[in-house]
Image (cartoon, rainbow, N blue to C red):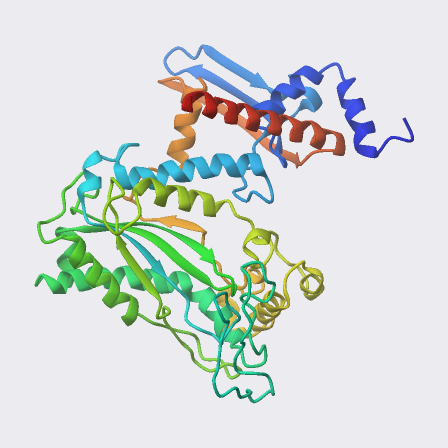
Length: 449
C-alpha cells in the first residue's frame, strides 16, 4: 500500500467505506462534478393546511454527514460536467428567444432579429494570420527601433498571433480601460439604438417604450489580441415584450440602420487621470450585422447555429481563449507566475497598476486583473428576451421528480462545510463523468440511426 500513489491509496480507502454505494450515488447525482460543494443541514416539507410532515431529509444520514451538490462552474477547464450542463441551459435560453418555447411564443421567429458583432478598437498593430502578416513596401521602424511591418505568413497556431509588433507602442492603458468600460459602452449602445429607431419613424424618444421593446442576449468573446468583442442577438418586440407583436415599422432593415448608426456614434469618457488623461472609448470600426432566419436561409446564420455558437463559447476557460486566468490574482507575484503570454501578462500588470490609482478605484481593476480589466458577465440578456437559468434549473428538477409540492411549506437549514474532492474521490468522479459522457454519445448515436 505504501508504494501506491496517494490517489490510489485514497481510492481504496473510500471503496472500503460501508457507505461507499451511497457516496457513489451522490457523485453520480452531481454528474461527476470536479469541485462539488459540501453542505450540511436538513430540509422539512410540511402540509400548508394540516402541518403534517410530508418529506424530511437530513445529512446526518449521509456519508460524512454532508451532501454534495454541483459547483455549477461554466468553465470547461474548471469543471467539464458542470460546464456541459451550463452550455445546454445557454443553448435553450438563446434558442427560445429566437424560435420560441420556454414561455416565449413561436411568433418571435417572424420578427426583426439580428446577429450583431461589435469589436474593440485598435490599441496598436498586432501579428495576424493571412498570406502575409503586415506587409509594408517602405519598411520603416517605430520610435523604439522595431519594424512597423511583418512579412511573415503566420499559421493559426503561431504563438505570435495577437501579440503586438511593438509592446512599447501598444496602448495597454487604453486596452484595460476599454475593458473596464465595455459594459457601460454596451448599455449606451442599446439606449442609442432605441433612440435611433424612434427618430427614424418620427416618435418622441421618450415614447419609444409605448410602441416597441428592444430585446437582446449578448456574449463577450476574447479575440487573439486579448481584447473583448461582443456577439449579440437583437430582437424587436411590441411594448409588452415577446407576447406582443412589434409595430409595422419594426423591420429588419430599419433595425439594421439603427444598429449601424449607434455603433459608430456612442462613446464613454473615462475619469481624468494625471497618468493617463481622459480617454474617449468607442466601438471598433469592424462591425458585422446579419439578419437571422429561422430556416437558415438568406445571408444570415441559422438560429440553431447561433444558439450553439453562444452555448459553446460561454464554457470556455481563460486558458482556452488565451486571455487572463480562470482565478483571481491576489498579489503582483501571482501575475509573474501566471501561465500566460507576455502580452497578457503586461495587460494584467497594467490592470494592477491602474487599480492602485484613486481615480480608478471604482473600477476595481485589481480585482479584475485576471480578466484584463473586463468586469462584465460573459453572457447577459434583457429581462424579456427569453427564459432564465433559474427557470431552466427548476424545469430540470421537475423533470427528474424533485419539484416542490404545491401548497407545501419548506423549512431548510443549510451551511457550507467545504468543497472539492480528495485525491481518490477525484478519480472516482472523473470516471463517473467519463461514463456519463459516453452514455450520452451512445444515446445520440442511437437517435441518429
